[in-house]
Image (cartoon, rainbow, N blue to C red; front, side, top):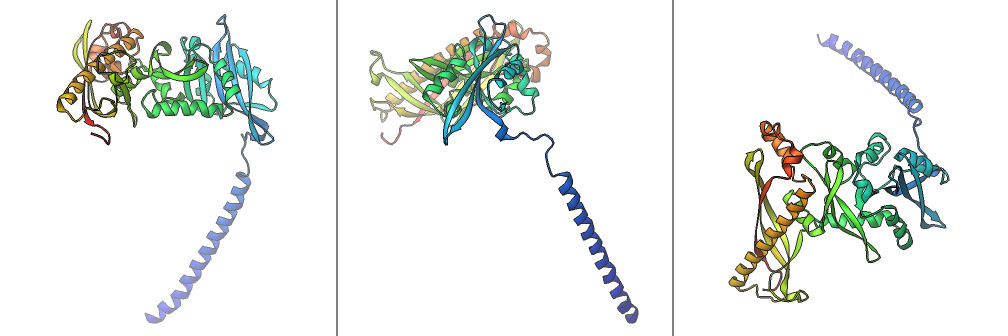
Length: 389
């Protein structure tokens, strides 16, 4: 038996080496074929032959028959970045692009677009009609920011061209800064797409305003389905975002707590919301008599309060009471605006669809929503006073 094993071992190793050689030949052939097959892309788009668009604005023409598109193209002259502004009109966004492409050298390339501005008159129409091309075109950047402007959007870009080289960066950083302090929602083309077709939920978008010869982000535009129907200022927007459980790192408010003349800084307190607890629940589901309780409880940190009497428990109790009442009133005013706009940004309809489908089937939600009775209540408690007592 020992002799037969000694004969078999060399044969086994010989076969193993032969198999390894065959495998290496196969891998070499496969590598060569892959180099031939994957040597290029059938749908390449050369950047050197494209004029890249970083910002776009769209408006309705005065007769509302066409769309006016304005685009900012980044260019470099002797290593210095410059902006080229082009505009054109058409019956559709694709038609606008065709006209813009004729006004620039090389190819008009909007796939790198970082922000879209929609004029107020256009936003009050069905915005999906204008955005449809961006969802169908695989080269579109659906992560682009989208915002509304008071009045036409084109002049906003033209004004920025005169004062700012990095136009797209300015707009995006303005939006990102407002997002970080809970003044506007985090929204882009992708996030609003599904909401536009959700019958039980609406959305908000950042809104720019031209004020005192400056372009400022001054609140949000409210949407009913796919049309702009109202707006909130930045303070109301922040409060609504908290109720929507979309608070960012910071949520800062200013409110009056002492009687006296308005210009006196000692009449006001500035504070941050800390770890808010929000409850939105139906207390009555009877059609025609729906009631909703809105509850916000949170600790707050005082950021600014010149009277500086925060060591006194009576003063703290007084401030807690006044701040809570003021914020409750502000929430009431905010909800009233949201209802007037018929914008269900809280997603109450989605709540009914998911958990009370039998009630949902009996309702004409768009009519019922404006008849809902809301019961807002805000309770805030000071726990932080900064580094001084």
